[in-house]
Length: 517
Length: 115
Image (tube, rainbow over all chains, first blue to last red; front, side, top):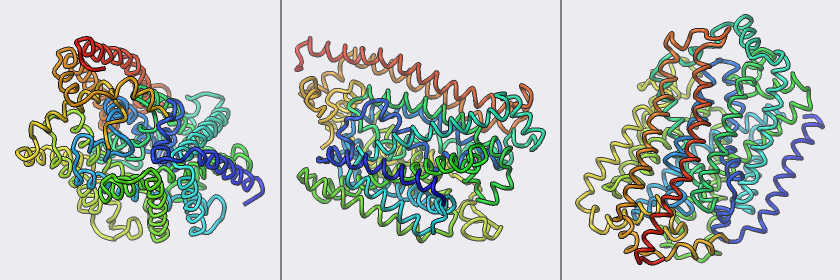
């Protein structure tokens, strides 16, 4: 680690701490803590959501994947971008109109039962933990690589930082860390892409010609990583539908004041992600040509350092240090959002609403939220230290799979289907979560006949890396069947009245704040 | 912070008001029109999207189109453009939906419902 990178590194840490200090002064109520008081503007929340999308996996992972597998790596970029539309068209506005702090709040606005809240909070915790382990393990390995720090120290640094932001600054600090990072990341990738284009005389044709001639035409068509249509269709389904079911993304819609602002948030996010992910082509193919696949592989098998290596080639130590510092900020921002989301499920849903029946003073709620944040941080750090030697990046795809198979069905049914009931909620979420975990555990990420390629040696029973193509229909089916089973008990005249209320609120946005209690 | 504004404008509706609004013809026409638009658009862009991983492994998209740029890249670029266009369409359309929703509430209030 040299002086320049120490400088950038400390600059990022210092900046985020200043943000946290300012945010801490504004964080006094539970609503401040969980949703920044609902006071973010459209562009701010748009950048923050984009920040959630642009995790280290997206920035470093996608550019590395394109460098090593060509077009196959670009599938992810397309998935992330189109996912915005699902959020925009059918999720964002009703979510804002019905919810308060969490997904469970939105569901219990219609089905005020503890089991609904319990199952929704559990689903959130599972997703958060899976996502977090993948991020922390990735972060540890990456920081080790970039700054030469021991893995466990790296994980601890990230752990302490994320806990600090959330503990003191709540959602305000988390959002601003996310906004700053999204801005820096956009600037950094823009700069790298421009420098790459300079190398090809600003000609897209020349870039593709060079890749085809010097590295092989196979980089320009799919097939280097994905060979089966069904496998890639399944993964693409998880990406496009799963985003709308990720609790840390859904929670962001409660940080704005109304549906209109939720809409403009996603509109900002759409443009930011469309620009960013277009640039991944230049980062990936640029790294392939300028750094070379061998040098990338020598540093990391997954290609995670392709972008920093490209930065080193194009701008030496200074640019590489800057890009690495931005990658570090990316990791911090994403894990902070996850800590906050996990805390909302533990402290607000399970402790506050289920155990204490919602009878907590504002002060107690904030205290509970802080204790919840520390607990979720400690659990994740512990698991991340334990999982060091495992390749766990696939856990993110499991999180998307659960989002699409468990959360998306219940959100859609709750908003749009009159006959949906609490039995359906419980059935859909448990089926969605369990089927993703079970089919995932039988899949090629866990089992491989090549020793070392996966966690266990053996033949995978399910030949799908992401089982979404099976589990999404299962989740929707379970929601339907569950509702039919529970119909006699739950589909009463009173339930119908509540659905009328939900329908009016979701479609008109009247009384945004008094929905859930 | 933002509660004040909302309280003044909206939150005095109770279950009876919601039931009454939900029964209004103008409300149901509006919701039906809105949902038809949302779901047909969603169906269309999802179909266009999921064709990528299906066609990507077929010769159609593996051919070179311009120089060495193959069909999959062109199709992906089209999906990016589609995303920002479909997003813009929504934002435009949603402004109209906002007006229609406000009109439904106004109509209800004019009929003597609570404000």
